[in-house]
Image 1 (cartoon, rainbow, N blue to C red):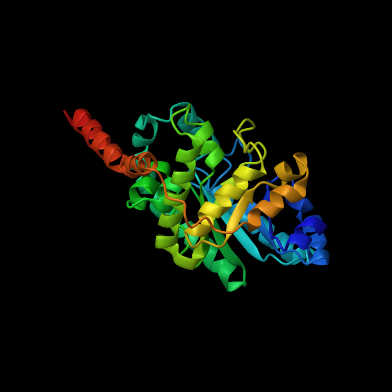
Image 2: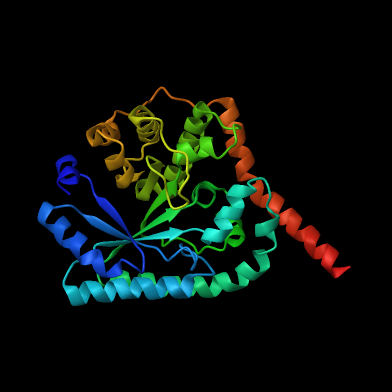
Length: 310
């Protein structure tokens, strides 16, 4: 906490059901050091981890449990960050078969019907938190965060619409864009995609836009590609800053502490914007192609419906 306080940084704490009763210790320590803390609820892997049509009931129950604990244990719930993603199992499918839309296309009809109910539940939860003075934030997959057709992406992925009055973070991890591409995306391409995504998030959400960068250490899957060093984080921060976005979330503190010196990573968050950077033509082409994927999914869905009706 003292390190975060020295750099004037905020902390986002992932809270799973097995550690929910330990949150008070983090909150009390943060209060002593003057560090603002956001709570990032997560289900277990088996339950699906993030907020979507499959997990909504369990997720809402977890958030309500955290809220009730904050009241009972007298610590302040300042902000709740909602991670809007498909289930853990579905994300594994997408990683293993990144060029296949079939898995998600076949879920569109089911997701669309359930999504209406889920969004109603989600809005009610957000209204309750807002009425209690709790700020709202989201972490959003890049396709939804920056697409010209977010509604189709939400239907494909089965995730609700983000609250209109929150802050919204587009997850634009260049280490994953490069590392999970199987060599298709270079480091320079990843920087270009980062700038395209940051520009789109800024255009959509204005000053409420945030960009999540990383990774420094392994994430929830355990084997995610990470930065080669603080110089790559600094380059990412400079590119995001040039888009006009001033709020950056870094994943994650565990990685910072496990790859010392920690100060080198944290100082990389304060570099000046790189106003000279421009995405390459190839990066712009990749970004445009990604933005067209919902149309392809809609076409495949129509084809599937046609075959089933014949």
